[in-house]
Length: 94
Image (tube, rainbow, N blue to C red; front, side):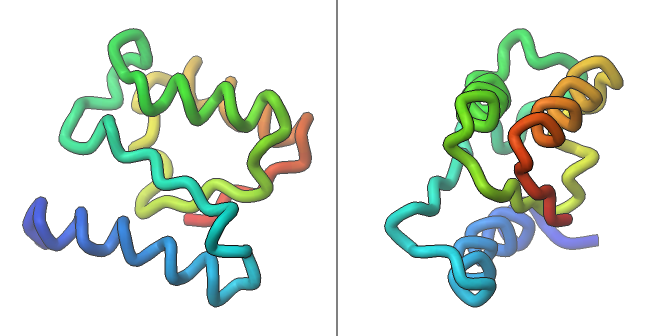
């Protein structure tokens, strides 16, 4: 099992993956304020709330993550993110 440091390093490498997929580097935003926090609830997770807001405003073209199911362990939060991505034509890459 990878260490927390290795997981964090892999998450930051997603920026380069997005560039390789054709996304402009100046348009890539890394939201990392929730690293190490439980995804059980979005109530105290500023990063997840920002992600949902950015997607909802149509500011995101793709959400990249390692094990994106860990973005939200609460089904309501997870399904809300999926629905907003569907409405705004935002891709999710795991």
